[in-house]
Image (cartoon, rainbow, N blue to C red):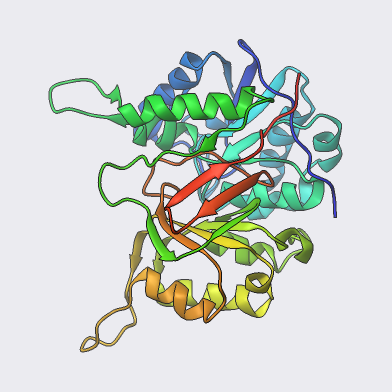
Length: 341
């Protein structure tokens, strides 16, 4: 199992590439991407958009075929001027080119890759193969250019208070090799984080989109079982029935994951429905589904945390030690995600 591979800290004016490792740029989303680029620029970085992020670049449901997507991404990994890679959106395409990743380039010059949804498959595969600390977080188009902003009926979209908080968090994760973030803030004004099972645990962060995590474990890029030892497992899900979530969680249970991890953090579900339940019976909540699968395992579980498609997302660096206190309803990063320049 590879050791943890932290990227070098970014500095002011460093180049951040916005890439398309998954889905294409939809025509109506072009203004969102422009706003996302402006957000990164305001954070102090120089932004370079790759050709596959241009409108009209598409093959089926992807920005390009697997070979072209891999070529563009690997070129960024090998480019010494590029210091971080931010996915512009997710989709359904990352699985098509995991076998083309230039892992030697990652080991030679580790740089943070940021994204969520389908891109979490890429983050997890890189972490499994190289130990790279990728950052599960918002993407350029629908995150930095979308959920970070609020649109008033008579005004241009403006950065929300949460966006200003997030910009500071993301900047610190990418640039500060000395001081960990510590406790992470709740971003939503309503709802709040919930204690689903009390307790406190510390360990390396590991997770992403639940279905992608489970799918990855059936490939040669699977996370070694030891990666789950003592981990704080985080996950979210979108566009799935609760029965599908229940099945995926049972697959993780049967693979021994829940006997290895130290704690669990569950994101905000998005379009997760009770389809399949009997009409005359009350549907379970996501909390009930999770606790049903975990059984009597004494794992702290913190639910409703700001990660997932409901947006916005807190930055969660894979492999970095974190502490979850479900009783106190807190989550914090105990280590920096980057090394000195």
